[in-house]
Length: 115
Length: 111
Image 1 (tube, each protein chain N blue to C red):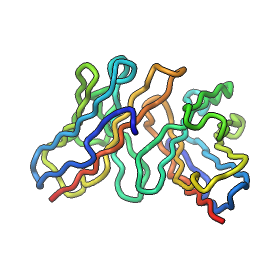
Image 2: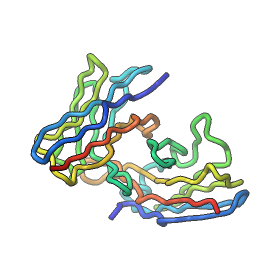
Image 3: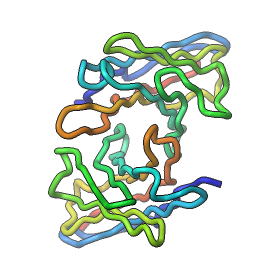
């Protein structure tokens, strides 16, 4: 079965760092880009950026450039989304999705940032 | 403010046909294909339509998509209660080194 499995929910304080993961299985992980999508509580979907797992080339939405880092480790078929300094406004559900049509989605990782 | 424009809400009674519109520009819908996603409450989005009008296996043929110029639409015929969900359109945008853009979402209520 083709699937993306994300890491579990996180509760963090403002200023802390965080890395969440997205592990692909059932397909050739390096053959498809992976994107990250944010959904703030009660809001719509926002594309954050993408990575080519074969060479780790990335591009970001201007809205998220400089605030998050997307990376991948192809040896373990896993993509990552990372923050160096979280803000309360980062509280959201984060999804990874497989290109090109976002045909496969992870189950989501809820990140809560609160003092 | 989403790059693609959808109506915030739509509704219909069981058995009816409803359509949801998605408006964009020449840099996104006008030059790339459109995908549609269904998000049931508390779940991840699911691909409903890709490449403007193609259904992934397992998606009922009650769902159909179309595109014309810089607009697209999703049609749902024979509306069922389980279709009550949020629906999002998306396309690739050729500006700013390329990015995916979404509509703001349409909440479909089955009356």
